[in-house]
Amino acid sequence: MFELGTDGPLVIMAGIDGSESSVRAAAYAAGLARRQGAKLALVYIQPYPASVSPSAASEMIAAGRSTAEDLRRQMEEAAERVPEGTVVRWEFYTGEGDPYHGLCDFAVKLRADAVVIGASQKAGHRIVGSVAIRLVKAGKWPVTVVP
Image (tube, rainbow, N blue to C red; front, side):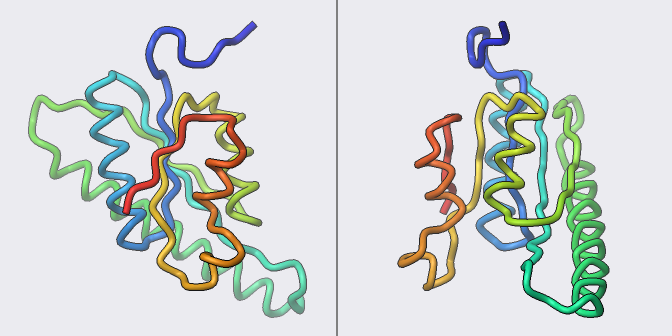
């Protein structure tokens, strides 16, 4: 039986969306992964509302793919700036749908030992609850919320 966290983390997952807090979360997670010798899994979930027209859905999918490629390019550029001799193994994953459920699905699939996510800056999330709060409440992984 697979047991999480017994020999130190093997996979540290960071949810990213291009916001300043998610970029800080990715940098924090990269530092953790480097120090622990773990793989860094960077995950972007393109939000996909269920109640949109087919033409709007295709536009959203195209925009999401463009955002994913931009994020991948930013992460590759950041990896190139890492000092020589510093090793961080990382992979980039994308998905579509509800960010909370998408991140949970990837965390299970990748067997993440820890999840790092940026704090939401949206005012409505104080009422409804942000993805970060929902991940913490799920209680399935250690979750670090980066401001």
